[in-house]
Image 1: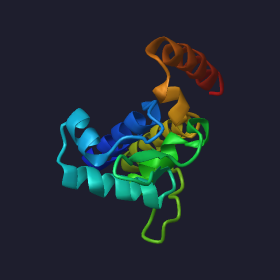
Image 2: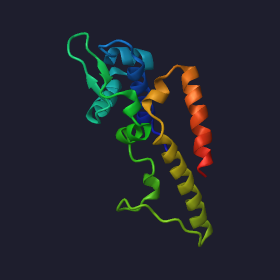
Image 3: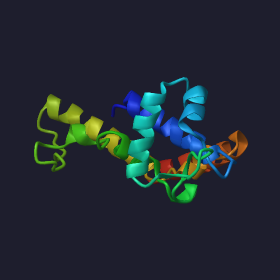
Image 4: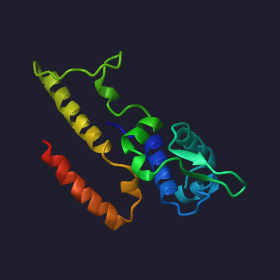
Length: 155
């Protein structure tokens, strides 16, 4: 699994917008200042997030970006995929079909390990929502403390 700068910064922008209490949201200049990124790059990332229906713009000269749907309906795996490529692309063939696990050789066995790790990460990312990330630190810690043991029990 590789997380690109675009995916990381896009997620950070979405978290900022999700955390914003102003009903007009956050503008590109505000996001640029808080994230220390160029306005051009912020505009590119907000465009991707807007086209994927995670955010929407608010009208007026004080307008900015707000969430397009409730934070608990925004799944982090979907956000990362909208900002980049599917996280498990490395384990698909040229037609997009998932490669099967195999154990016939050392190379194949190690590939199976990476596939299992990727599947575990994907499963976890499908269960984390933006709401989990925009909560105050103590609330997020409580959520993740509950999520991780539950996730590990499924092994």
